[in-house]
Amino acid sequence: MPEASALLSSVFGFDEFRPGQAEIVEAVAAGRNALAIMPTGGGKSLCFQLPALMRDVVTVVISPLIALMRDQVRALRAAGVEAGALTSGNTEEETDAVFSALDAGRLKLLYMAPERLASGGTLNLLRRIGTSLIAVDEAHCVSQWGHDFRPDYLRIGDLRRALGVPLAAFTATADEETRGEIIARLFDGAQPQVFLHGFDRPNIHLAFAAKNSPRKQILAFADQRRGQPGIVYCGTRAKTETLARALGEDGHTACHYHGGMDARARRDVERRFQREDGLIVVATVAFGMGIDKPDIRWVAHADLPKSIEAYYQEIGRAGRDGAPAQTLALYGADDIRFRRAQIDESPAPAERRRADHGRLNALLGLCEALACRRQALLGYFGETTEPCGNCDLCATPPELFDGTQAVRKALSAILRTGEYFGAGHLIDILLGNETDKVRQRGHDNLPTFGVGREFDRRQWQAIFRQMLGRDLVRPDPDRHGALRMMEGARPILRGEASITLRRDTVQ
Image (cartoon, rainbow, N blue to C red; front, side, top):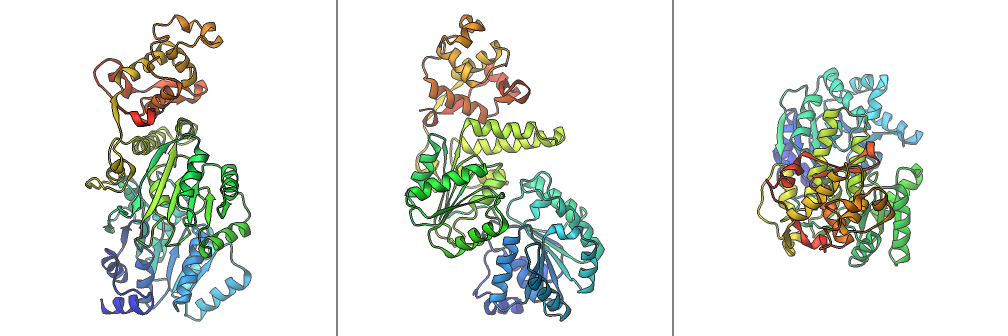
């Protein structure tokens, strides 16, 4: 592809393609339907931007975030490429300039948000300008099973049929089930050319830790990387503000970001993060999909991510320049209860809730992994690898112990109290604590009263957390979060199976 190679050098400034890019560019430029799954930072955008320059008419790019579109349009214009975006964030002058470029036949790439597809005039516009290709960025947003579902992405398949043009879909986070849904919804089930180029980002160090004074843990992690740009993801808007303040008081340059801020304030944070050295952004998951900053050196999760897909995408914002980057994800029993409750209280059908519990189980398995994190992470996406040597468990293999007896005692306490109590009361029973609640219910007369004194309260809390993480028990939303035994626990209780736990997270 001499034309592609020449454009790669003259427009984008690269001497050669990254692994996997050339064959995707060739397929898209030839007008074939394509689905490309590439690791975050693998150069997905070039795989539709470069073919657009090889075509005579307009390529329309459907993208989920205004910040993402603005960044890509700005970079393309800086490289001398006519590109524009039609978004709700445009000024009147910006929109007029885009239409003028379209009418003059100058525009090569037109970015738009999926919400614009609901407008009746959009199809007529795209026909009038001679759209020749649809490129869909973050294609996993079409999947109702995925972590970033966007209902307006469901309109893209209709748009492709109406225009009768090829479609190229790109994503970094799609397990086999999500890939199947992308093909069904965007390509009507007809098999596109699929490119699967690996999920491994070997330069990213993976680490998880059980919560133990989580604010101090995040401050300590940031302190070890003082002066380096990083992102801290939080589960709530309020936590982004308090943690950003704590980092500032500790001498870091930090700011918060969440969906409750007005659009101008969010754009200010995005601009600062692009331009300032060493800035830490403490954010909800609203931040990041549109940020293309190559030298982010670390990403921390102050709370449990939503899924492995979400975790993979969020840590993938670090180290896009290929240099070493570090990650840390904190998790605790409260996180697990919160995520379970989110699923159970969802109005989604039972099949969807079961699938969501399965996805959460996979994430919790990664949290409580007994060996190499990267093997567990890549295994979820269907890849196999040797131990990576670049995760916390490869560096310090965890100390394990046979937790079968401890788990049986906990399960017995759950069953003998009718599955009506949470971990706090159950631990009082196991420790033999004669609290008012224990005496009032006669639980000091149970056979399990006082049988767990080999562990203290915090150690039992860690054992219950591992039981939650292994899906042996779940909080029951109909019983105010009381623990209910799951089917996987029964063989352990009956003595038909054993279980290995991590001693380091218990200690």
